[in-house]
Length: 178
Image 1 (cartoon, rainbow, N blue to C red):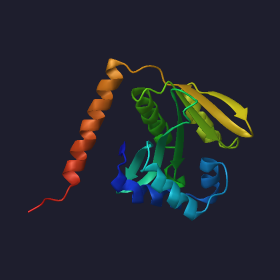
Image 2 (image 1 turned 30 degrees about the vertical axis):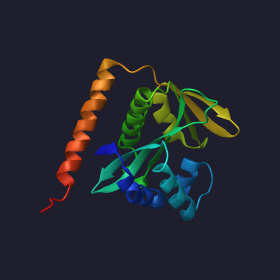
Image 3 (image 1 turned 90 degrees about the vertical axis):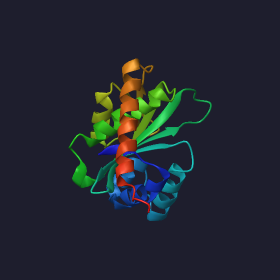
Image 4 (image 1 turned 135 degrees about the vertical axis):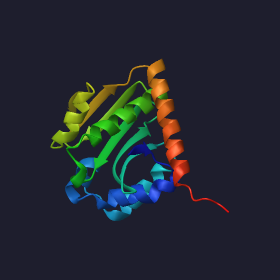
């Protein structure tokens, strides 16, 4: 199941990041990062304007897509990031997460998305190409630029239906109060 993660899901997201192996951490964050960095990073993702979308399996986040606001001098541009645990790769999960992030970016007024990845991260580059990303090398990183396009009536309806489904599923999981 893919859904938007709430502040209550921060421990699940944090644990997902902590389960990433060293090469996966390097690919996602473009450098070696330790556990303390990931704990703080996960906390920051739920205290600002970041949107985190997760793929959950057995109530654990196994993959995540992130939409971050970029610096104010880059108007209408967001930054996307993806992380997928090794056992969940090559199943189309990254593609589904990025599609959800792009749609959310479009509905939030972003017209461009940037994705930075390690030049050896060919899987991430392949996912970005599915969305017609223009890839180039910048300061030793592969940067993908994706045009989100404007929202459409259909994309807004699809997002609204997904939101209603998420609310319904969340309500089913709530414990009953007596």
